Length: 198
Image (cartoon, rainbow, N blue to C red; front, side, top):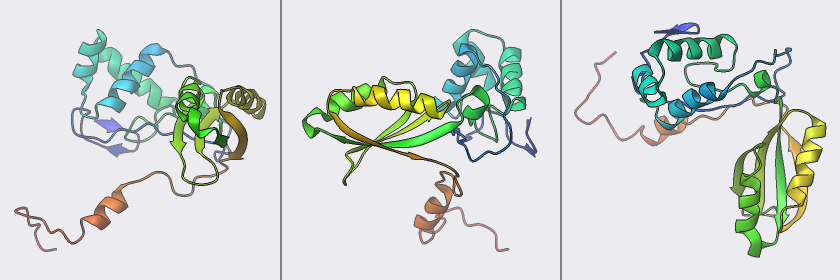
């Protein structure tokens, strides 16, 4: 199956799918494309089960395999999915700004704060910190004005005492795990599967 610039195995193979987002590091003008619920359902299945094949997706969603192929191809052509995994380019759907919002909270209301943050669709990730800030929310919004509105909503959550926002302007090293996995298994050998000498 040809995806992008490289030949990869069919979707049924064990490909690591991950949703990733692009921030304001992209300087080019990105055309805003619309996606619908079916697109989102397909992406969700691939994110949940990296081994899901086109036939599996079609059966689960009650659509034809041709429709799945067409949707995946269109998502790729519109740069909503970029690369070998379903990577959502949020800029392409009108959400180009990403930020980290640090929160100082009433520790007794941590669960309430986390629940309140999780209910906000712009919040992509919530982390509990061991430091001056108690909680950090990674968010994606359409504009700085939208960030102000979102921040006001966060301040209104019971238990939030103070917020501080920081913008992501570039991601020189995207999220990765392969170098770490190679590092921690470097001395473990190959077991019964010894590779040929090069």
